[in-house]
Image (tube, rainbow, N blue to C red):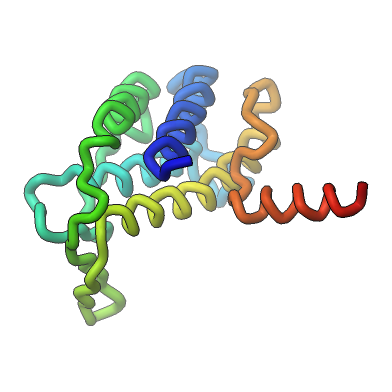
Length: 169
């Protein structure tokens, strides 16, 4: 399976989860995630993907410089609209294009050679960790929300579990 197909499926699942929320639920501060909201976690995921489409910085990507769009953490409608944009445009990215990742740590900035493909994979991996937190929040605060059994679990973990399960049979 291609990385763009994997990410498209992940974004489609994200949409299916969002469609089960209303804005009040989406914005609710939850103790289980340090008074954060499910909306803030989804916004964070969306923004990282959106960095790949920032035409103002065509030669580099900087997750630190991302534009934090508060509508994506408060509005289901706006979140779904941007996810639809990502799904529609994911296949337009030149995966092999060499770019630079600008990353700052404390008072130092690093310029790291990379490609759009590598950054797309990073965004996917990054989303899995936030999905795990979202899953915990949903299970504890919104038990009627439905999601796949693998939501928030890394593909390598799923593969390992399947291999372990198969070897026991």
